[in-house]
Length: 183
Image: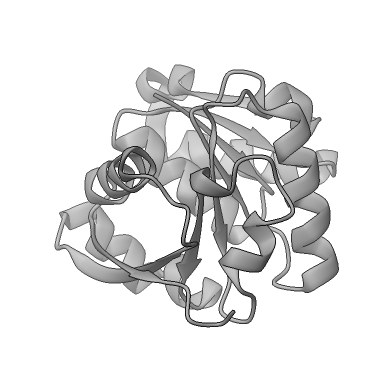
């Protein structure tokens, strides 16, 4: 499975590391070349040369999601940013691509309704700083099964839930799903 991660800041770098360690092919995208450079250094130090072929870098969203099965955005948790990224991902990713967005403030049902793939959208309800913190990174590395909450829109399919569940389990978390209550 190919995972596209949009945004190479702290959360994006950490997700790329966790996904590569779990055996996924990762495409990490950021519009800022400096962010991609820092991410590449970070990943080389932690993955080593043998695992680096699992991680590729893209300077455009289109390049990152062209063949993605799962796309995770790491943009700010603000309505305008999330709407913009969801519209871009919906337009540029293949129809099979599942969209995951970290958000504590926004309704995944509302965001999903702005796409042609509402059944393939999931929200990760976690504090971004908590998720990318060294303590949770260490938990994921040990495979300790730290719990994370994911919210789904009413149209979500079992296939989508299965793919997202498998991803989070392989990177070391115990996902729990619940319907979006923020509608």
